[in-house]
Length: 210
Image 1 (cartoon, rainbow, N blue to C red):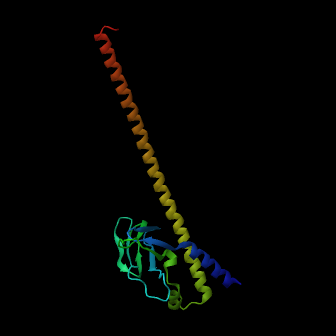
Image 2 (cartoon, rainbow, N blue to C red):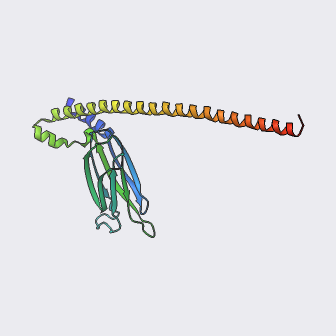
Image 3 (cartoon, rainbow, N blue to C red):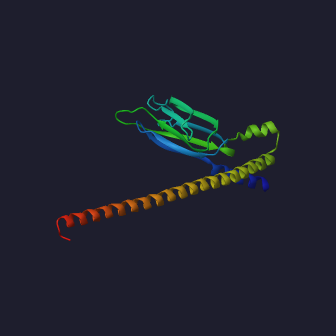
């Protein structure tokens, strides 16, 4: 009873931490997908163009170019005119990583479907290899998975808290700047109004209307 329960919990938690999707890509129109990855986290991804005609070779027009970049614009993976591919890296920067897909422009435009799976953190581990190297049984493997998942969730919560604090600091700094800008704008408006009144007073005095 305990073993199936552990497997179910592991599967649910792993699914919640994994990112897998299928999307349509039109020629000439790039599409980017972002993933928020913390520092020193493992990330693996794989992608392939879905064959529109099963049982037949993939058309020559169904090729994609892919580039994965870090939050600061550094390239961690690049491929041109690929049917499929995969990548793996350990993040050296924290933030949003971008995976961009595009195809050459065709006339008329062509549509293709891409399957893309992106795993980070504990979901990126090769668990069968871990079990083989460590010579552990199924129960120990499931417990190891749960332990790593809980640790990953714990680290993720602290990471999100740090990001929240950064956003709050940024909001406070922005609000402070906006307050100073408002006071300066009010001062400028009052100064302009005073100059206009002074100019009108002088004008009326010269015209002997006052």
